[in-house]
Length: 276
Image (cartoon, rainbow, N blue to C red):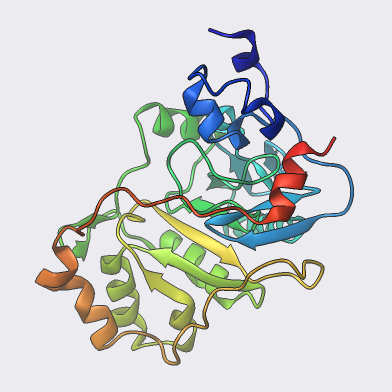
């Protein structure tokens, strides 16, 4: 392996590596970036095509929460996202002494990851596991076996569905800084049935997967004019025909087409990649 493969790559190296060395790294240099940029936090671009300046690292643990799978290097975010996680931990600590397991945020400067996510690029996304941990050792035992257990069997939530999961989802959905969060369609349906279509369910969006965790996304913060907001969520709790579609044959059919073409990152992200 070329020695260049052992340290972060920058666009200036692309020409010298054009013969094929480190092909994967050249295609996506962001996972090789080891530290955030200096200066104030700024969100740039969109969730699936962006980056993050001045990122802050989430501590490995705090009141009521535990950051897991830190070997991935995906525990960086905008300060507003870290404040949300810390507030959730305190809210869980009021309930009891178990811990919220916090999964991936973003990389040190955001950007595209090597696998696992297309979003999580601009520092406003976090995965929260829907199973609480009794202790750090308990969390390690769960993750040694793979992902925490699914709360969904077929089209319904299973016996692992609990008030803990509902608490995490409802707490996040009620926060004004949260733009939306994603759950498996069966979890959305369980919440609709249990609440009769509460107003806070508007932010809870059905999406395949997300049967063991919820993916929480914040709205663009005021300090980041280059942040690109998503389209507004339709009015209403989303418990009617919109949700029914997810259980239709059309929704279950595999999508067509080939591999998606990666979008061109914002110019500010290219500059951020080269910054000290």
